[in-house]
Image: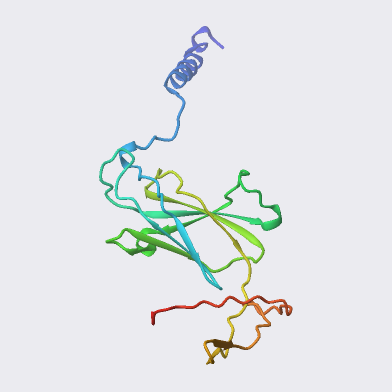
Length: 203
């Protein structure tokens, strides 16, 4: 091989390219969303439960964290934690292992009152449920957590049937069939307590 063929150009070009790449390479992170686009957190999350389901309701925000008007909402994130009642510790840290994203137009039930709702029907008896909700205005435009709600769920007893009322001398006597099953079909023992409610108006 002649001296003319021993050119250092390939090695020098590789070295120069490496230096340029190192100089241009910086630490890359996810873009930070502007604070004037993040929704205010929800503050009035509440629940109503019946014998078969739980209904969460809340007022969704109309302003951002800096006080500007919120153009719109994309969805809501419903965060849920489920703990066996015997393992539940009030005040202990809770891991919210599941989250459900609900489209805003499917959750909103009253646009004038800015009221939204989420319903869950698959509930395990003997467990405590904890919920938080976040508002989402777009990619990475997610509010802080709402207030926390918590409740214990157990399969309730069936409603009494054949309820009748009889009047007497200054008294009213109520009668009904004894309840022997839970709403999920399981049998219950004879130690069933009943609550009688009295209203003084037709409503």
